[in-house]
Length: 108
Image (cartoon, rainbow, N blue to C red):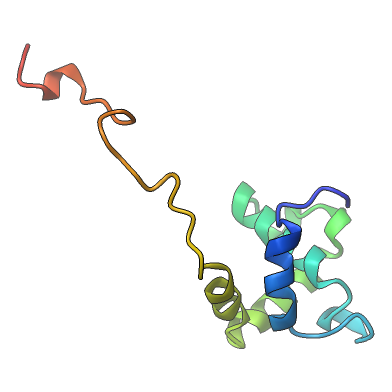
């Protein structure tokens, strides 16, 4: 898979906090970036695990690895590492973005 959701800068921050390493056998560390991309695909699409593309690997293996990482709080650490510099570009909500419906303006 050549197209990633994570930027190289984001992955560089996350990589040291991931479990396993490429030399580990089985589901423990074959390709951490591809594994994270699979999780992001599930989150973005809302699809069930069984619909995960084979590009990411066996869905059941990825699900079991995901469950292990949840129990080990790996995703909490990854979130903390990536959220140290919050991007608030889209956090501003004002009248230039949100318009009140004419019924809410007090005029009929």
